[in-house]
Length: 66
Image (cartoon, rainbow, N blue to C red; front, side, top):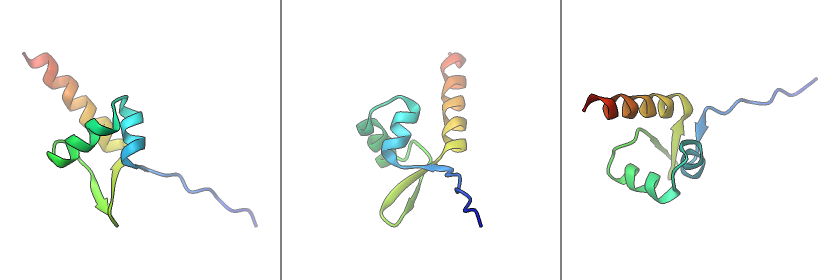
């Protein structure tokens, strides 16, 4: 019987920072200000990749409004 590897859909704070190309400290600041969507699970903040992509898209759209 072959074990299937589970595909992760969440990232830790450090991984989210790397994924977005920003510092860990900036992600931490955005979480504290409730400016970036995340979930707190067992003392860890987790970020869904799909939601981070949507967040980034919304920030891009905001940047061209002005």
